Image (cartoon, rainbow, N blue to C red; front, side):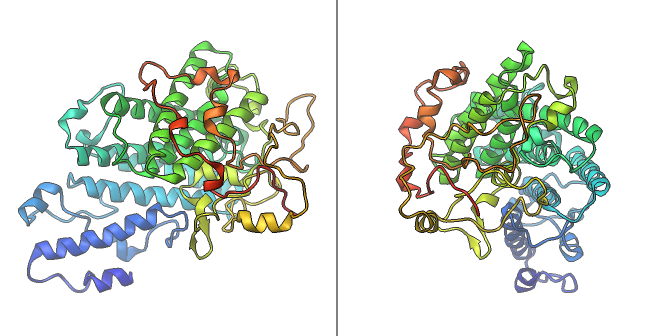
Length: 455
């Protein structure tokens, strides 16, 4: 709240003079708030402070252009809307921040976590019902995207992504098959229900991104949050690329290809997305080598198959569920070279909060600890010791295993393999675009060797 006071936005001190200057101050404050919501380490608890909730949201753009507004103020907890893009962005990102905090909470019992998930689900849908129809991009009722100003379109895509991603992350957080976490966070019935909700919204997100790509290939104005959402949606759908139901299988192939195109396109502007693309490579390879023989989408599956994927990997879970967590350190974001170097299996008894660790190991510290050991530069991380918990396969979650998520596998090579021909570009995709055009030199990232064991 210090920022609000610096900008003279105290609730007890009504702005005097030019209302446009007061609006500019409010917008500066809300910009800071949005930056906080993008962070993996929010300064808020589950709900924002009351003083922030009492601060008016920005005017709609038409009133801002006129320099004044006669409308009644709209707040974070208002049921009404002023029709402004920024207002809806702020509401949506505030809800996302709350979802992110819940996912990482370690203090909730199984029953309380389940209740909190339903409470947040209700909050997300309540916000969405109040979003103006003109901001909704639904694949079933396509909107002519050419009618939007380019800058406005980027924000509208973001608003739609926030809604779908909030539901994806919220519900996939208790489904081990999707989020690579423990199976004891909630009941089997709740997991089954949440799995279908997460899957459904992941598919809608892919369709939304596909609709945008049919209109434009311009990624320059797209937030990395959308790339993160594409990755989460990818993680939810990639287990179904070998589904026995041909309809579900083809949908998974099509949608994951769309998601990869978005991730690859954004990697030209965000190095973080290049890392995400590599993580997607490992997700794919792991599911292909540990096929669960899924017969249908989640609602048609035996609930046991949603929890039988016993690859409990804390860093993988953090990368799927929480924006920027894998880049975070105690004192801020990591410098280049200190990005994620340990995204591997963890103790199944770890709490959710422990599965979102706040420290990462740099390649330098890893190299010092392993001087004299054979070079791992040519090691092929095929995860031979990893397997899902299915009949005939023991639970190896506590064994020493290769670091599945070391981002050293060159994506262009992996996706060119015969086993991944289903990722060939569909008609929607640009056949000339390939990750070989990107700078994927492993040494430029200094992210460590593909094998790391914590002691």
